[in-house]
Length: 165
Image (tube, rainbow, N blue to C red; front, side, top):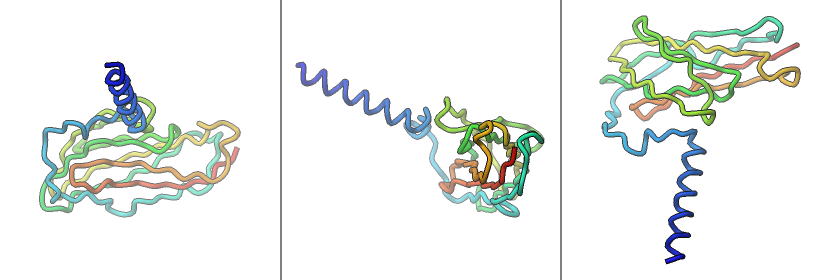
């Protein structure tokens, strides 16, 4: 009996660790919807942007990426998250804004669940705060915004900057 209780406790602890490492994301546990796999979300120009040299004292900088569904069916954008708390991302589809979304692992990342029909575009506004890390945050910076979708092809938007005081 005591071995069963210990086994249950260890199993629950392991599940808790997995959920913690996943940033509280339990969307894959019980989805209820099938993934179509025929939509294709792509970045129109480039998934990479170089801010060049930017100053902490100048404040936040931003860049807009354009996404487009070039597949054979609609794509559902599920979640957005960033690689660092100094970065946030906002989604805009047909004039409606969602977000801002932040770093995975720092609270639950809410689901977006917005459909992008075939040929439709969305704008992702990525905002970077070069002063977020304080005086120690100078130098080369590389960050990523990840967009999960039901087409099984996560999209990564990347940027680079050299931060000066």
